[in-house]
Amino acid sequence: MNEKTETDAFPDRLSTNPSSPYYNEELLSRDVGIRFKGAEKTNVEEYCISEGWIRVTAGNAKDRFGNPLTIKVHGPVEPYFRDKA
Image (cartoon, rainbow, N blue to C red; front, side, top):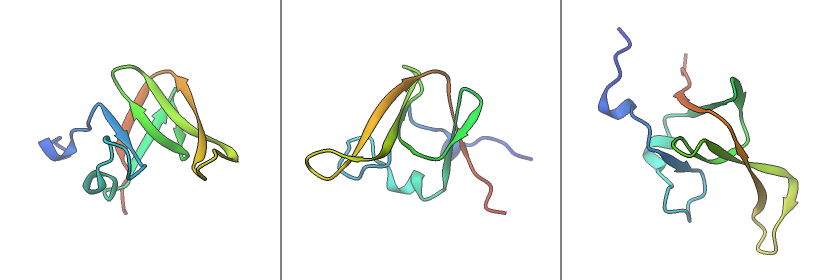
């Protein structure tokens, strides 16, 4: 019933920043969720499955270009598609 197809495969790295080479608008439009260490995270900017890390925003802090500051956190990463039900 819920068979994984090639369209359900996640890339090793994915970013929400449009200026990143790992940005994929088509995949992000399908509402990707991230489980990190078993807990759902909603503030993930980028992830890497093979290296086992995520980048999360660090509060409301901004860098000198106005982009949110991020912190790299290591652990098991599980991307999934949220149900739109």
